Length: 248
Image (tube, rainbow, N blue to C red; front, side, top):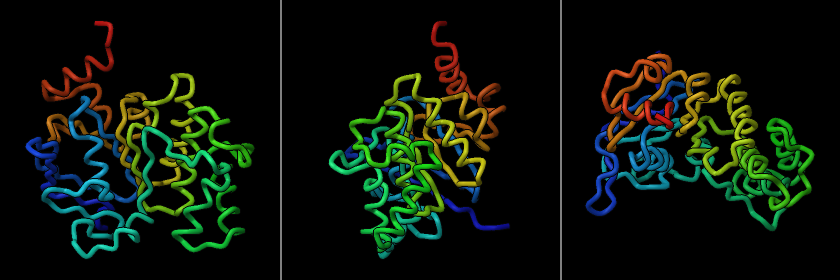
């Protein structure tokens, strides 16, 4: 049996006196899509940010994409080259064209020459459906288009693992579908993905496993059909009822 692409053991994270993660154990296999759900403030985004050390864990062990992320001597730049992350907000460079936004990290971090970086950028922009926007600045694009550019930028680095932190939460409802369609395509192509999301339809359709986090712990996890339609715990039942039946 192959080693998991992500292995998390007894992960704790404190901010001052507030313990946000309280002993997370999680493994993600290569090619697996895991959707992380739970109420606001439950620790979902903090979990993602600990995986690529945007937040330093208080204690515990994290292995990701072949790197021991909690080893003090880890080459964090090398590790992050293999871990793509897409945030709620797009974080594009407003003064650069879309093409340059996707090419710049390839040139500065991977050392690619301009032509190679731009060729890869165009390929990735085509993959996410915004190849006709390559000479525009981000301000001329819709939020959904900008988020697809952000995905293209991450993919252009050739990651083994993609982390998505509520990638559609800042979008107008009519723009969500295009971004989710790109993510579905990545899942179909075998990309390993950990997705923090409130899009239960996406989780039901695409996830191999749904992980429900509340109060900094994993309350339950399993196949989407089990967790989303027949949750075992009262906490998951209550959360999903509020999310799936907000008018009740």
